Length: 258
Image 1 (cartoon, rainbow, N blue to C red):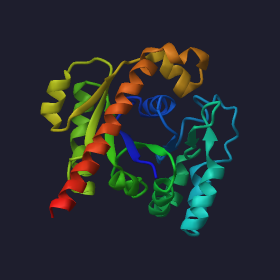
Image 2 (image 1 turned 90 degrees about the vertical axis):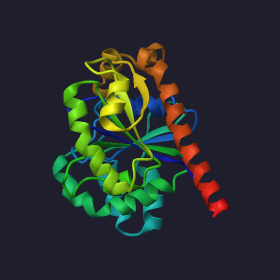
Image 3 (image 1 turned 45 degrees about the horizontal axis):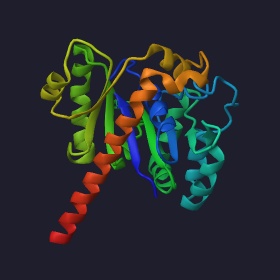
């Protein structure tokens, strides 16, 4: 089965959805972007430019997930929308209305099980972690790696501090937490690590033109491959996968020694 990578925001608009889609489109194997943000999904209206009707996605899958694991596993394939011509990159569209979040809250553990059972790596766009019960806590708790996407500014670093504490309590440690820093700002990567106690996994360029295509559906997708963000995304994805493999190796060694 595939690995689960969760991306979340420290606050504001650092580009979580854009980063998730860029990673998926440049992933070396099959990948699924799961829009788990309780405030709503953006991909249908963004990179897919509104050409796919909003009748597939998370809310429909959550209903099936509540009926049992077998139903959820079968249903998920029907809810996925291709992102590429080869149909190896897909998206589970998120909520079309944030008022639906309360109805999905109880289904997150079941949704997690069906995502974990996919023969593809899953990149979950979890939005911003807040205190509400509608948050995808089951996904964040079980993810192989959680990456906080943030701009290197005082405001975003400040907002990240309590959320890292929330993740640490939720997961039991900071071992598989990391940062994806987008663009330049007032703080260096070293200063951010020192302030937050979490490693910077990669620094991605602030690429407004590519973000406009991926998040807002503006412009031609054919030119994406040569854009700064898409050139940087494969290296960032490689670091994320390496984090998972190191963790699995260490866990296996601990079991063997024990």
